[in-house]
Length: 313
Image (cartoon, rainbow, N blue to C red; front, side, top):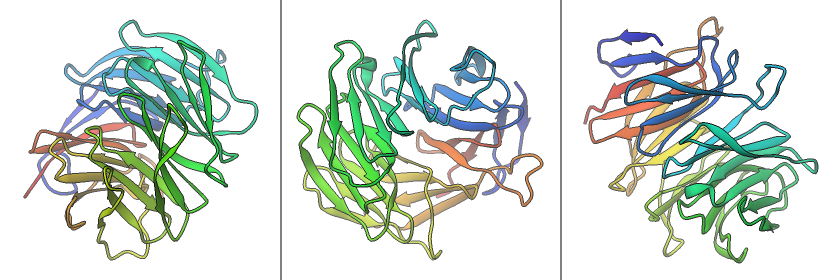
């Protein structure tokens, strides 16, 4: 672990911790910002305790030492983690650091994955447009067939009862994993590239490949806001709502982190994560972000760094 002390500005973090020497394929930060799971390029999947900045576990999908895991999701209650490469996914118990299941998907590639509290349900979005909801302990399996083209992004409510999925068919759906029935349909003018649920059950975020990045009311299904930005397009790799529901924090493939007002869609702050070493031009993908109270934010990026910034109002 390397700690780098920095002075504060919008582009320079107040602190930085090295989590992957050669960079990372994917990362996820727990909802309470106490755990980070990082799919490293050189050393498998590493689990970090962010309260002590200590290394807890190293996991691997392949016995040959290679690592191609590109999707990670930590359950809201920090009990389990799911990891996935294009062909297989694994469920890991965070208390003991051991796997509880490994499943291979032959029908189509895995595009995104999510897990609910206690590992009760796993959501798998696939390249054939199908979304599978799977309960490891009971063996129950439900396939959602609402999408007509490949899935790009999925999320699941902490209790596992609701799924949010988005795909190349220009649609995002909120649906019930107990019945497979659609609760809300969210239309976009281009392919939906990112979806995210508010863990408190208030909002959904759906974004497409061009100009629309919208916040929706989960009770009514009505639009709350459309994020306001001047770029012709802005692709999102992650999106997290603040605990009080006032703000949305997003990350992108272009090093950007932005904080938005949920009600108005107005951009409030922008930060740029450190570029990955040796990248030309200087680049990094923001894998995940999080709020630390009202005063700081946190990120994990393909540069292999955990970085923190102050929020300047």
